[in-house]
Length: 406
Image 1 (cartoon, rainbow, N blue to C red):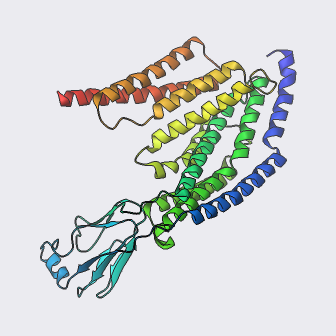
Image 2: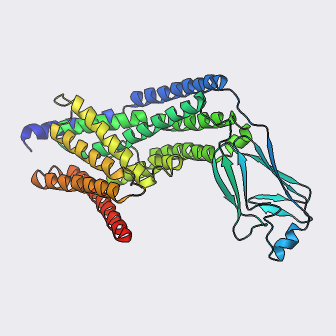
Image 3: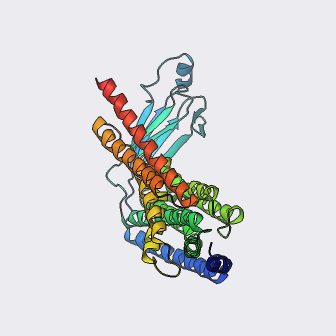
C-alpha cells in the first residue's frame, strides 16, 4: 500500500461507516415503505371493487350412511357409498353428512352422528387428508377450476406485488454479497461497498411491506370466489401468508443478529438468502424448487449490483471495472446454475448440462489466469462450482436416461 493509500484508507473507512449508519436515510426508507403500504392497500381496495364476485352456489353433497363404521371394521370396501376420491369445483360447497351412528374424522374435523362438514375451495388441486373411513389410504378431494376461475385485477395485482418482492429480495442479497467482496479493498472499492450496503438498508423496509401486500391481494382475489374464511384457509393463500409472516420475522431477526452495518460475510449472505428468498419457493413450487430459486435470485442481485457499478464506474464512489466484471460473471454463473432442470428428455438435459459445465469451467479458467482479490475469487469459485455441479448433474441424468432408453 502506498503512503497516499495508507493516508486515504482510514478516512475512507470512516466515511463508509458514516454512510452505512446514516440514520436519516434509514428513516426516509421506513417512511417510504409505510407510504408504499398505504398506496398498495388503496390499490387493492380499488381492484377489489373492479373485480366482480364470481362465486358458485352449487352444493356437492356426499353422505355417510348408517353402518359404514361397521363395514370398515370388517374390512369391507365402502366406495359404493362414499368414494375415497371426491370431486368439486372452485366456489362450490363440498358437504359430507354423517348419518352413521359413530363419529368419523376428516383431517382435523370430527363429525358426530347427524353433523356435516362443509368446505369451499378457492384453489385448484388435490387435497389429501386422513380419515376414519379410509384409514390406510386417506381421503382425497379433487378441486377443478369450474366455470368461474380467478383472474381478475386483484389477482394480477398480487402477481405484481409478488414479482416486486422477489426482485427486491434478490437485490438485497446481491448488494450484500457485492459489498462483502469489496468492503476492505481499495478506497474506490470500499466506497462502492458503502453504496451497496446503503442500498440494501434502503430496500429492507420494503420487503415485509411487499410480502404482506402480496398476501392480502391474493386473499382478496380468492375472496371473490369464496367467502373470506375459505379464502384464508386455501393452500395458495396460506402459502402467501406464510411468506409474509416469515419475511416479517426474518427482517426483525436479521436486524438484531446480522446488522448490515457490520462487515458482510458469506454467513450473512447465506442467512439473508435463506430467510428472505426461500419463502418465495412456497408460492412457486413445483415450478421452481428452493435451490433453483436461491441461485437465480442471488445471481440476479449480483447482476443488479454489477449494473449499478457499471453506471458509476470511473466516479469517485464507483467500482473499478474489474470488480464489475467479476460480479457480472458470478451473477451469470449463479443464474445459469439455478435454471430449473428440464423435466424429461435426454437432449434438453445434454444441452443444459453442457452449457452449465462450460460456464463453470470458463469461470475457473478466468479465475486462474487473472486471480482477483481473495473475496472476489471465493465468490467466483462458488459460482463456478454451482454451475459446474449442476451441469455435471444434468449430464449424468442424460447418461442414465440414455442407458435406460437403450
